Length: 101
Image 1: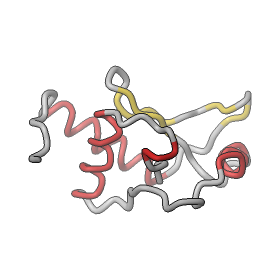
Image 2: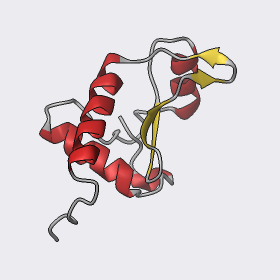
Image 3: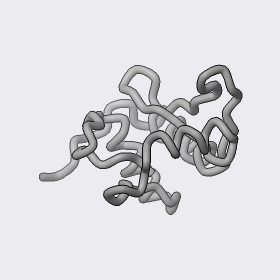
Image 4: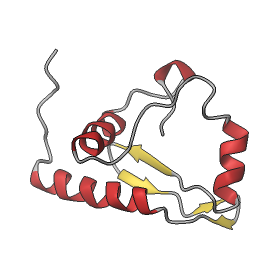
């Protein structure tokens, strides 16, 4: 899940590609519905190792968060699949064409 842009999340290229490529590969990635990601509760789940977390950026691609507030974070099987997909797609096409309008 990723927060919707209405939450203040930045509309980054890496975020958009992670969603696009993940959906195309059948990985269950999607925008969160309003209220689905209660931010503090979500971070508590990550810290308790019952959820995984990643960040995306144009310079780092998709990177799993491994430590949150000094606590080791679970790696997450779905994020592992998405990270592998990201690396394959980014290596094969480091300059993807813009989406059709």
